[in-house]
Image (cartoon, rainbow, N blue to C red; front, side):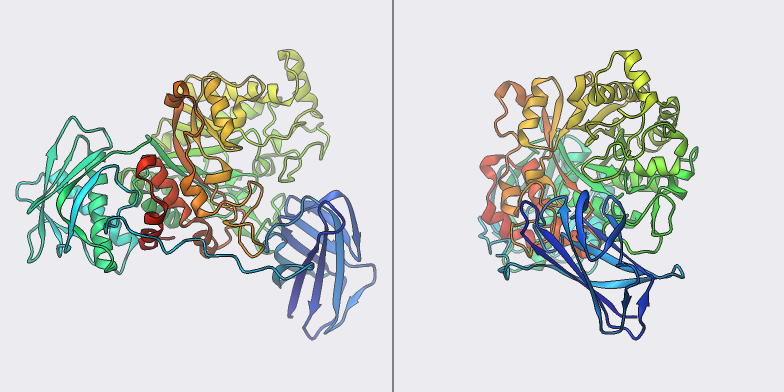
Length: 634
């Protein structure tokens, strides 16, 4: 059968308007006794008015509708209904139906083709270009741009070879960077080799203990000399050489230094990127490619967001239900209904422990540290679906929900099994991830969570806790004890400071809600990583125009805004040492395909990379725009 769904939105009535849905039956069969399922970020709230349909159920972004009693949809006919009482007004064409399907009386599902959300009050203009043509200051393809460069351009060598006598460690490092380049640009020519060849140029390595740990110096003459004090510095210097050679080979606007020098070191020690694999599952090979891209940008940390309401992605051998149930969504999956971008079929996946170890080893081989994250106490709908013994059986159903709309979705501190399960999970993951950093989430707990749970209320009375956030703080301190016993540093989102917070020692908090939050956290004694949604969330739409892709809660985030944002911002001088660095966050509600990923992440991810490496005085938006087109994508 052929079915097509049209969406339209009218701004009346204020403040959120009306969503109108039209289902066209272009098939040859009459439809009767069916339901229509839609996944949409513009959710219908409990207080709603629907004309022409009945809302049977809604869980987060999943909606299931029924037509009026007895309605039959003949070939060529259409069924139209409208809804007021929306969660919020839509801002972009992707804000209504992402996917849709009908379910017939025999239990069969039939997918529905959908169109963009149309503004019924006018034709939206096409969005302007996101990047200017740009202007090079020097013809060298370096991103991030170095903090000191004085060089005369010349022709690129055919290859760079290791000078005679180079150590095996340095030769292996050269080959590692060459392999990285080959993975990112499979059709490109080789850059490095071990032996001289006609037209190649020699590379010598030198130790310089005076250079910073991640710093390097390149001196260009007949022989190129790479000086560093650590293997990290040598790797970053080799990546800089690889970028310049690749640019010169790829685009005639770029050259290679004939003479001169580059003296460089990163601005911040924390230069990270987060990837949400819960909302949309990315396979291990795709994760490795993201990590390769980070290495090319000389970033140094990959934040692996392994769990959220929508799915649990890490094998835990003590609790196989976390992945057998919690890793898959589908119309017929108990407790895990389809969400944004899903169809009716079972969909998802997880990483085995061997796969996670392999990804960790791959990252380490190219200088990237991996920090795992499991979301606690909120964003745990998948956990409670998989392990129902963690639910207080006497808690009032649907008694709280966070902004995403998952009812009663948090680990319950009043259930003793909560901490036994968490301790086991943390123990298994600490055996896989050698990093001292372990992220425990902590964001977006509903303000009235657990208040209708008798077991949680007993705990609150016993411990003298007033309200949800003091109970969350008590919970976080218990989890921190588990990490401290294992020699780990606790990392979390900025809400972990609420309700009394946790001990700032060996705690790093990530400021995501606003830039000002980071300053407030530093004043409370926390080390801070800046990742505000208003600049560094890669899922935000890159313009306010209706035809742009992406989310809108933090406003439009065009690439220039990401590039220009200064994480130190208004930090007082005495608090700047607590600002550890910057991080991009790739949240994947809207990222249903690689094409969506590339459209939203680039060029903003390299903009974050340059902001984490390059001093403010050396940043140049026009220069960045002129060369970012050379860089890899997923």
